[in-house]
Length: 71
Image 1 (cartoon, one colour):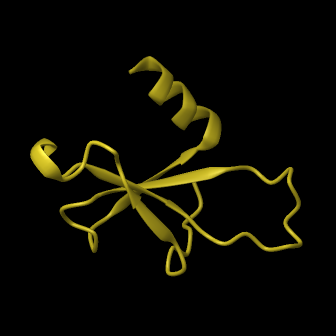
Image 2: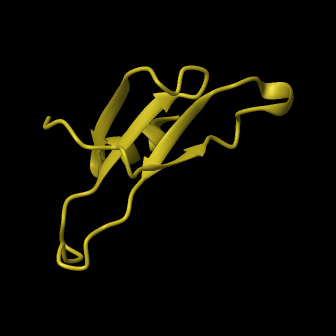
């Protein structure tokens, strides 16, 4: 997969993070260009919320949906 510039990404903690559940993962969204169109492929960046400066994984939208559905 290509490397993505996530400097403008907005990271969102999992609903299972924090509180009594401990830290979990975060997924990101970032501003989309007005010129990208609605048909652009969706990529979901994911990282460990305990190490936000650490590495991240990226998934194509259908693969991420399949993963979540399997849970």
